[in-house]
Image (cartoon, rainbow, N blue to C red; front, top):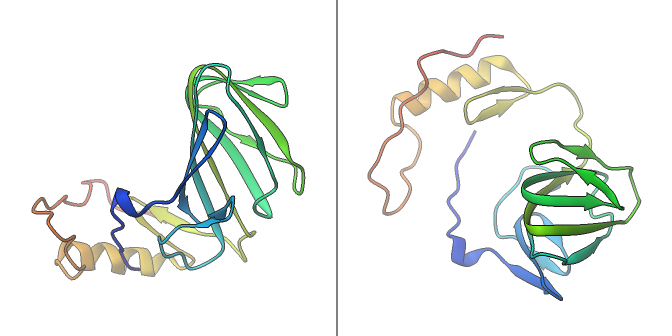
Length: 160
């Protein structure tokens, strides 16, 4: 487990017409995020002003689209805010926004097995999740430059 801070100013941005894309993790549209990952990962923040569209190529082996605001159409079909659509592998698709639309695109390579997740910790072995929580609680993670607040672990602890 580790932590790496990347300032917002370092996140690459791309425009296609009115569509705006921030490459938070991974590679897309000829840009590469400086955010370190341990496996091929894709995480995009896309803003589509009213009437804007974007042809989304297959950027990763597995991909999903998650609208957070506005009205999104995926290949003409509406996708409600808060609902995730897992995309067909290898297929481009057309995204269209109605109103001020914001969405996330996530994806990457298929995992090699199950993962365990609790709070900000993810690992293939549950004991490593517990160890990371203990390390966080003991202050063994590096501090974020310029950050003074410490966020304690949630009261409800990890259970396998």
